[in-house]
Image (cartoon, rainbow, N blue to C red; front, side, top):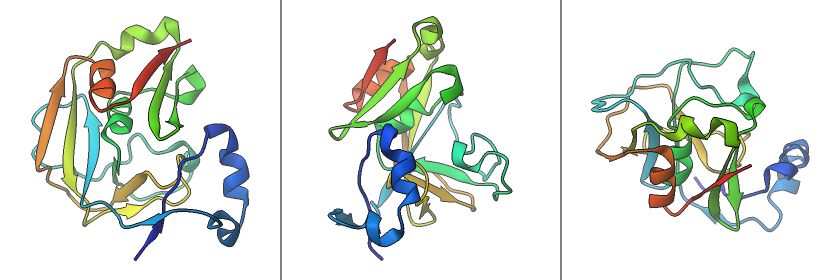
Amino acid sequence: MKRVIFTIDSNFYDKIVSMNKAEQNIGIEFREKPPFLFHGTTSPSVEEFEPRNKSTPGIYKGKDVPDSVYAGDDPAYCAAHSFSWGSAEGFELGFKEGKVVFVVPNDLSDRLNVKVYVYKIPSDKFELLEDVAPLGHNYWAQQKVKPVSFEEFNSVREAVEHYGGEVRYK
């Protein structure tokens, strides 16, 4: 099955989700789900990810959602999700011209100084989260998932930049 994949600036998210499916599909690139996804974490040596009700996307806060393993199609995006943070704290994460941009409040920049791991995982058990921004990049699975490999980084910034993303401070 083909999925709608596109990138939007986070300022337009509310407008996009209020559109009906036909309106969202106008002029959009179609592509298959990639064979591998990525998951960022501060946990080393994970042999298997188990579904949990932790770090649920903001759109699902307060709703009854199944325990899940979350993953994304861009390793830089997942590296930015490797530690706990929230939009209410002033963090911003999105894509600008196809590149991951992670905006961090100056007074919270020290939180990026933690060792992180980005795991590569098979996508076969995952489904696209069609209503989670940035649209087309977030997936979930309600089954255990074994990673095929991982990379270790000394900081969140190092990981994001290694994968071609950018960290900005405000």
